[in-house]
Amino acid sequence: MKENSEKLTGKKDKKHHRFLIGFGIFLMAVGITTVWYKNHMHYDVEPHEYYDVETLKSEGRDYDKSSVVYMTSDISPEGLDKVYQALNVTPTGKVAIKLSTGEAGNPNYLDPSLIKNLVQSVDGTIVECNTAYSGSKRAETEMHMQVAKEHGFTEIADVDIMDQDGYMKIPVEGGVNLKENWVGKNLADYDYVIVLTHFKGHPMAGFGGALKNISIGIASSEGKTRIHTGGAFSTPPIDFGSLVTNQNVFTESMAEAAKSVSDYEKNGQNIVYISVMNNMSIDCDCVSSPTKVDMHDIGILASTDPVALDQACIDLVFKSEDGDSLRERILDKNGLHILTHCEEIGFGTRAYEIVNVDETQDEADGNILKDNSDGN
Image (cartoon, rainbow, N blue to C red; front, side):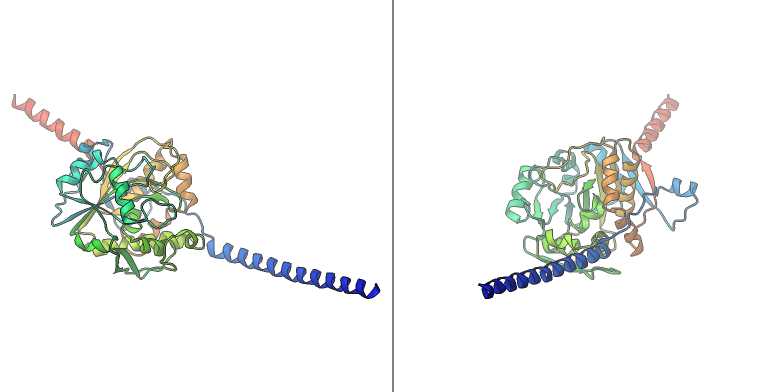
């Protein structure tokens, strides 16, 4: 009996010893993971500052150059045409219209009736690439085309899912995280790109503007995964890779991918950007059940510089009385870092001057009336 008792006691001691060792290893792993996560995933949130030229001058802040951003408060086909005409561009060859077809269930994507006249006036083809996140109805070409049809885009123009036959690699000049960008293969089929963006929030990037539309938006599903993970992963979905990627690495990679697309389009000569600020919430059109729209509609803005355009849209959000939730989302995800990194790698400028095409039109109408009056 005594021997059995000692054996049982010995077994219990060994089990207890193994438990302590296992528990110690577990605590060590947790500690190492915590330290890694804290050091690797930490990022400082950049404060918002206004970058319109008037404010920069009044505050004595330096800027090397500025870009013009045209604006109208008229969110209609006519308003869209006004800002487009203000860009004074004449696309030649085959024209791509880059927009988001919107995830199934999301009602906030650009209304086809709003963009129809512009798209058809340039004989444009609506272009998109497949998504790279779990649960998406647009992760495969056939389903993506079905969503595009349900949302009314196939009724107004041809739709091309540019990575349906794979991707091509374009170089990233001056990139810190990416040396190449994997974009939809069919991008090579187009001579000019008009980027139509629905400006809004985004659950991962803070906001979705023109820069996101040409970086994540033009990347193939594999390319999207690379951007989300700073080039570490290339096989969708992005879910795991995003969890272990520093937020700044992600936004920097977006900036670098965006620059590569602009460089590919004849150093920005064959691409222009138009952003519609309506139906805005903290969520992107890629979210199937977005947060309720909680901001008033602002207008349509356009520029040849996507950095200045995104900055102008953000400044308008920060000036809005009902922009609290979107402002919080932008800052929480350090969304402004994409703009600073663009400038760091020599792409675009945050400084801008707003030209209100509504006021320009009013002045023109006034002059016409005056001339007619004088003629009488």
